[in-house]
Amino acid sequence: MVLETIAVRTEGAVLFADIEAPPMNLLGPELVRDLVSLIQEAEADDTIQVLVFTSADPDYFISHVDLTQIEEYRAEAAKLTGEASIALLFHHLSASRLITIAQIEGRVRAAGSEFVLACDMRFAALESAIFSQFEPAFGLLPGGGGAQHLARLMGRARALEVMLSAQDYDAELAERYGWINRALPAATLGDFVRSLAQRIASFPAAGQIAVKDRVNAITLAPAEEFRRDSNRFGEGVRNPEAQSRIRAAMKRGLQTRDAEMALAQILSEPAHH
Image (cartoon, rainbow, N blue to C red; front, side):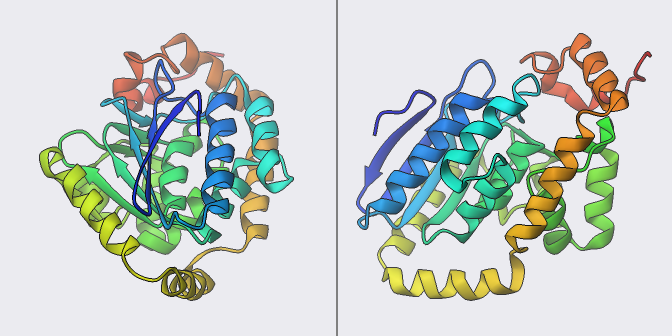
């Protein structure tokens, strides 16, 4: 499997996928295209049971979507699900027979957060992981399933706080709120995830499929709800107010590596019309 933005290696029944999409792991057409290929090939290979996502960039896991290429990345997502929506790509991943684990270091915001929420488990580095669901800062609903997952994981009040504040949350607080399974020191994170992945992969796939099927029946919103959120985001992002706020944020460094180290600051500065 040769992909442009993801380096893959297998260890037995575990496939490790290291995201490497410089300059800052934006979710653009290339990364979406590679995710589609990765999912298709992993699902078609019966020897693979567990998929572990990591990032080659210590500062960014997946920063968010590339706001300049929304139509393009949506078109790539359609190659997996037949619909131009990363929400349905993420839903597909959650519903997949594969067990998915996100090993998070650095920033994971907006659609990046929605991607890790689509994974079955999330483990994050205490020192470096930062989470944010910032779409409401632009007047938008998170379009990739964020509202669906966060409300179920955190409860109503915390989900509203996280989204409406558009604030950055560190790994410790993300753990306390239920955004992630646990926060671990960076020095032990990799070994912990690898050992868990290998342990799960040593058990029969039939059990994994049965458990995921039943847990998803209880906790995974139906595809229709993801589609609805995706459509709301798609309509909202064309709104003049959203466009004006995105342009203003771009001028202040949105989608540049240095400025997004502290993105919450950029988002809180007023948009000049």
